[in-house]
Image 1: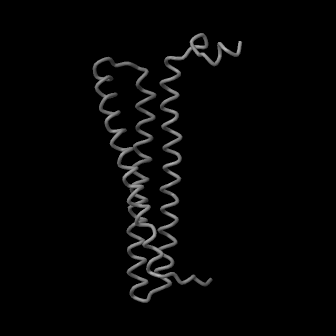
Image 2: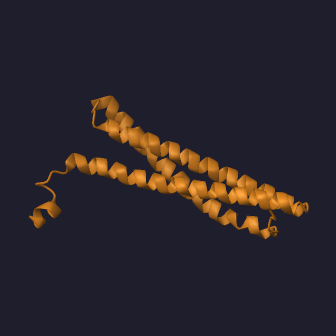
Image 3: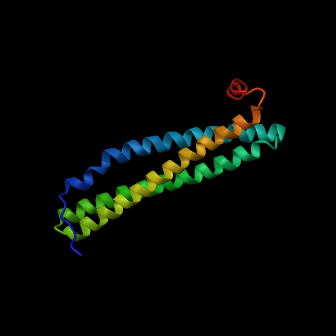
Length: 143
């Protein structure tokens, strides 16, 4: 198997994307942290059983965000190692670490997709609590 040679600027292409992704990941995490605090307060005051589904959903989403951040950080580190290897004329090592960085970034993005899907599930939980067939305008229009 031959490994394609890449220039030192190729791994550097990930840097702008990673900084934007980390900003997005951090914003998602901060938003969920505020939601967890609110739900915890509500749980402590009311002990409402309906909050259990929300809490389970948030727990899963927080785990996904931690994995997203971890995989993104390792991807960034591997990009740096790749650039150092290329700078030291170790093009095979540089290419392989860059390919691994790309794979981890792809995994991080996949986790983002799953987390976005879960966030829609959280909204469905809320909508299910307040929606009945009689109060749903779409259902009543179609009848």
